[in-house]
Structure formats: structure tokens, C-alpha cells
Length: 266
Image 1 (cartoon, one colour):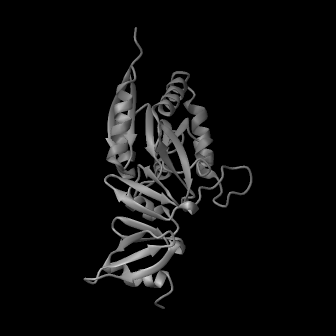
Image 2 (tube, helix red, strand yellow):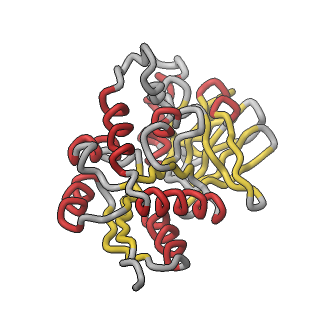
Image 3 (tube, rainbow, N blue to C red):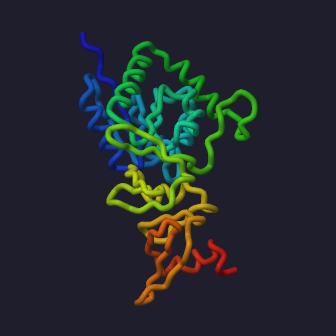
């Protein structure tokens, strides 16, 4: 007699991320994707209604985060969980002790296979009780990171994962000069190198330290200490020139704020 299909719920605010997980799960045997949600509130409702065996849970979502979802459901009632996140490996220390596994975007097929195999094995061996204890430890850990609890997650990104030639590497945020939109993705400009990352401008704007980065245009984020000049171009448009010589447009609605950021206006 065949074992029942593994019931999986996907929670991620990015449509492309949900589609990628769905496509990967189609290649697995005895798997039933019972639902998809794009926010924390819907995730809580879906977990309670659908009772999935496994949840792929995005950590950083607008409104209620993945950790908020775990807190609302309760560690003891939470299904097996694989966190999916743009946090770098260092920041994921807290989640490493609490979930079956985690996937750092962008992840390759092999990394997914490893995480999914661990999840299936844990569910088959009925190890969810031990996972609940670890999730509870994550929720109860002091925010100051004192003692032996999980390390606190930094408020702002320190590194961004990118995919190059089928491999995942990490770009330190301090090396980035500018970030520009590229369709559904972004390009990270660091020195003479450009990296493509599966991120949204809005997400990065919220997760980068505003003391160092500013969104100067709907499609451009720049590092403030890399700005060499703010220029007014013919026709009244504005642009910034960075220390590496590259220029990027500045929205007129953001000019005054940018001048304050760089100390021109008080």
C-alpha cells in the first residue's frame, strides 16, 4: 500500500518564487501542493484550514513575517517548516536551529532536493515534536542575543545571495555601489562587476540600511557615500554621478530628500 501524498503549502510574497517551488515539487513523487499564499495572514488561515504536512515559509513578507506566522500558529501546532529567505548565511543562524532546513534565494535544484529530502525524512520518522521544541526556542530567544539562544537576525541586510553560472555566491552589501531594476529582478553593481539577483526593489529598499542606501528613482537605489555629484540635466531632469563614473537618474520628487541625505539641504 502506497503512503499518502505529502501535503505541501507554499508561502511567499513573490509570485516567481512560488512558481519555482511549485515547479520543483512537481518533480517529486507523492507530493500534493494543497495551497499557495502570498502573505502572513493568509498563511495562518491556510495552515489551520488545510493542515499541511510541510510548509515552505518565506521569512520576510510585508505585514506579518514568517516568524510571526509561527508565533501565531504556535510552535507545537506548526507543521514541518522549511524557511525560504533572502537573508544571508550569517543572518540565518537563528533559523538554522529552528527549522528542518532553509533555502537562501536564489537556490539551485540540488539545494532544494537536499532540503526537501530532509523534510520528508523528518515527517516519515515523526520527528516534528523535536522540531516544535526548536521552534519554541527560536520564539523565546531574547532579542538581545544574550546567553545560548539563537543569534539575533540583523535588522538590515549584510549580504545578498546571487546566482552565477549555476552557483550561488554572496555579495557583501558594503561592496554595492548601486542597484537597478531589471524586469522582475535587480542588478547589483559592485565595482566593475554586475550581478543578477531574484529580488524586488521594494524589498531591498526596506531591507537596506537607510543611513547608507537611498532609492533615488523607482528603478535605482544608490549607496550614499558613493555619490560624487548631483546634476541637473537639460530639461530639468536630475541624475547622480557616482565615484566610479556611472550615472543614474533621480526622480524629481526625490531630489530634495536626496539633497538632505548628502548634506546639501538642512
